[in-house]
Length: 254
Image 1: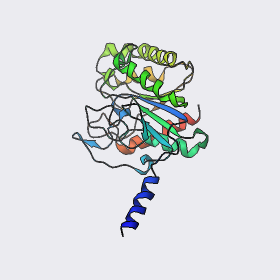
Image 2: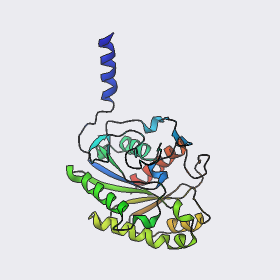
Image 3: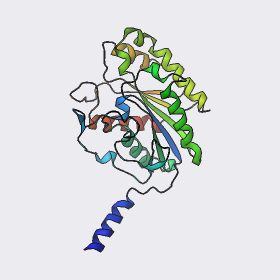
Image 4: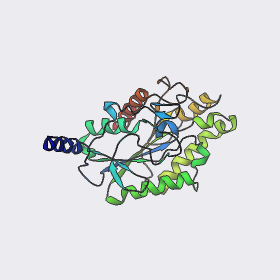
């Protein structure tokens, strides 16, 4: 019986042991709460439900807060957005989709950087959030992998103020330009998400800025219409899965 249990555990472990200690293709996950993940979180408790599309895969790694690569598991931002309860975000569904469809990517390394409740002004060059993103992204490539894209989902916090909504487009353009410059990747593919919700009355103004951005190699995936949790701000688990697949479609067509 003990031998059987040991073999069963070993077989399960092999499902999550990475094929390489270093990823080949690196993807940055940045923004606020809908990127860090609140799927399945109700009253600050995560239900623990992990859909099949978000399960561990030996070809998907995650960069921890201590800058080490480990097998990726939900919640991806558990040690990054760590002052709140995090749940399912779009990252694992995205990664599982791309590795299944494009074997040439090899092992994919996800670099979680999103922090809930943050406005675009808090991501400006020189800020803690910006510096942390650049530091983590720079550490991620030390093993020889290449940053293939940044996925960006942010803006809900900027809907609370009409002034912030008005300034959003210019701030976002500068942020994207600064990230590309500091990562020495002037054409880094960036896939941003147009808001599905907000924390104020200026949702459409921010969405207009996101959808109207005209920068090379910057794409926009529209989350409007995806199902929200009862708080009407955060995407449900299944909506996050759907968004992850939408981001994967966009990424594979860059």
